[in-house]
Length: 210
Image (cartoon, rainbow, N blue to C red; front, side):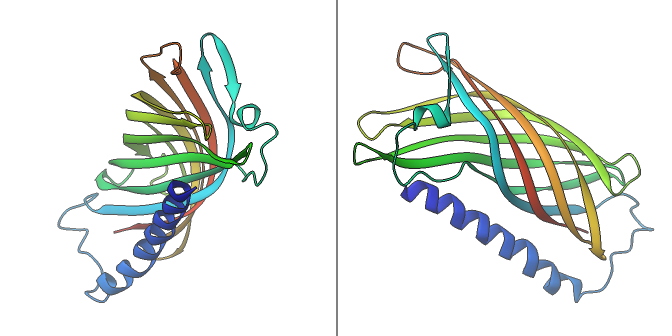
């Protein structure tokens, strides 16, 4: 449960950094885009519901909800896009890091149970019209935690990401974003550790682009 709270705190801190840091930077005046068209940077974050989080163990597909069946104090399935940050290669193409997680907690027979998938991806984001609608994809490292309160297993592997969304510009450089991502992970499975996992997430977020 402490791990889940830390993730939520990081998500909140990311929002604060993304929201307040640009205001100070903006005091310097607008960037001179004529000298370097398309160059710049971006930072953002988001939070929302996780959907369809599950993993495959010994050929059986187990959803987070199934694994926490009968649990008390069960939380919703929460997804956090902890941070998106990187550079603009062109006015329509962004390259950067995307860190995300989906998590659910509860109590099984009085013990704290915690299920979580983490992604640490390099990602490309493409805006066909340079703003508004975008698609993105990426890949990198992933891990999963399956803690039933009696036994805790953690596996590491690789994952891929596909997503799409829309950025609503509310002021120069400031955007409210809505993103739907799907990610799939692959691990070196065993009798007690999963072979793969996947989840979908719908994020409401903020992005500053300079």
